[in-house]
Amino acid sequence: MSAGTLDTTLDEARIGVITFPGTLDDRDAARAVRLAGGEPVSLFHADGDLQGVDAVVLPGGFSYGDYLRAGAISRFAPAMDALVDAAKGGMPVLGICNGFQILTEAHLLPGSMIKNEHLHFVCREQVLAVENADTAWTHRYEAGQHITIPLKNQDGQFVADERTLDELEGEGRVAFRYVGWNPNGSRRDIAGITNAAGNVVGLMPHPEHAVEAGFGPDGPDGPRSGTDGLGFFTSVLASLVHA
Amino acid sequence: MGRVVVEVMPKPEILDPQGKAVVGALPRLGFTQFTGARQGKRFELEVEGDVTPEVLAAAREAAETLLSNPVIEDVVRVADASAEAAEVSA
Image 1 (tube, each protein chain N blue to C red):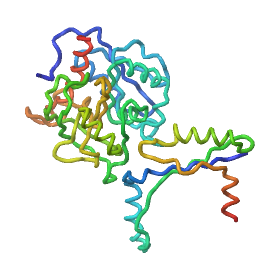
Image 2 (tube, chains in turn blue, orange; image 1 turned 90 degrees about the vertical axis):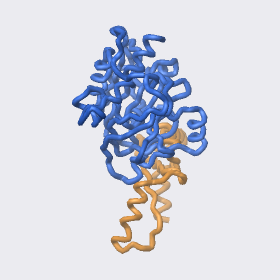
Image 3 (cartoon, each protein chain N blue to C red; image 1 turned 90 degrees about the horizontal axis):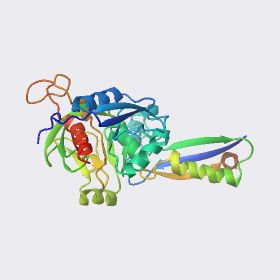
């Protein structure tokens, strides 16, 4: 299935993007929502009202400067209290990079991220395999499909105990795996995971930076032509329409 | 004014990239006797008045909920700092 923009009019689908102090990629996430055909809604960490949005993106960045642990302080923001309740009620939530770290700190997803094994900040175009194409954020991909999106992080090494890792594998909850090179030492090459219901997904790489030709990674149609990240946003819009 | 010390360490089974970098740097300064290093965190929580059992209990709760992440870290110590000073001078 194509990961392109939906034909259906989706004026009613409103996707919130929460900004924390130190968030960097909120405007890129809002742009990705718009390019996929949805309406982005700016939400603020200090506001406990999610304004009736249909889904939420927790964008990347360095909220609170990664002080204490990446995502640890943001997790206690008023907007997160509302988000945790909404996510448990089935609302789609996507955590990207720092957003993924916040979701693990909030215990909506298992495991945690520690400093990259090689201690370097890494920034590259990363190939991923879509392992689970049944979640709210991935169902417009094919299982096993390879996508290329940017990756940029310092604390990106996904860790969990062996029992948790076995559970994630056994339940098909590994959503994305690094292909070709594991850029940060993540256990079992895990780049992203989902909760059991498939509405909460987190990953370290950045789909919102690969949504418009001319501004993404290199692709088959030439330099910067890659738009492999758009499928995340068309997936969630389609799942909202059919919900 | 009282002070509570909280110490948090990475779990033994979790690789500690920062500790690994530290142990890698030590021999360059001639410290060849150290074969391993693990890096943790120390917090000092201040309170008005004395460190009561209630204050220590609250510090323990803060240590478990905010100051550490039980997936990757252990709280190894929650103690009254004045008692700690006594230990050091003893």
